[in-house]
Image 1 (cartoon, rainbow, N blue to C red):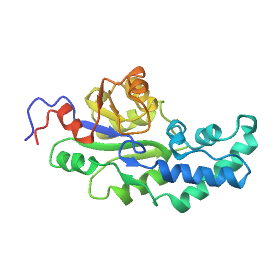
Image 2 (cartoon, rainbow, N blue to C red):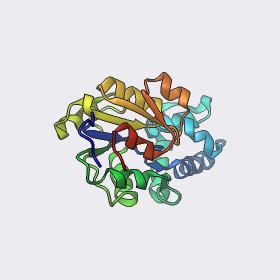
Image 3 (spheres, rainbow, N blue to C red):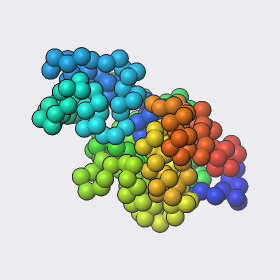
Image 4 (tube, rainbow, N blue to C red):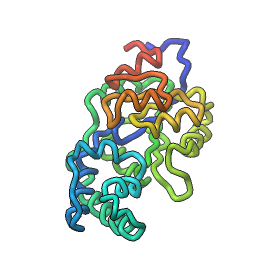
Length: 225
């Protein structure tokens, strides 16, 4: 049942590392580009510390330090986007417990939105492909007209679109980028420990609470299921 004391009216979810485990598909695409250009590849797990800030930063981090010039980064980013286009849904899946969490939220007067640094078209395709049975509105990814997270512009845009105060949002994410976005936007930052980064990173960058499983979010919202 829903209580009368729910302090929050909306949730912004990060996508990669929060709702969806996209690490292997992202890492595989990047490694193919690196190998094709004669650069060393990385263990997939190493990409946990490379993803989250958009494709350009991902490729810059993946390249050898002495090859991080503008021309090489540009060429590799274009190649990465083509590779990811071909393999974006091979291994990607919702994390365990995400479906149960979202099912429990259905029927409550809580709006759900997605905000990602993944390109906007891919963000929408991922939500449509892997999370079609739940209503996320809006779903926003990286757009040329809006700065990437941790700039709060995207989060504030969602607040305005939904006509809900930032202070009435929970922001659930798995990286420092997400926590900084939430703090700067005036939202309540919650760190997802099943994602790509550590508890220490999340706490250092403003997480007010950490949760180990998606369904723990329900307790934060005072929902009894």
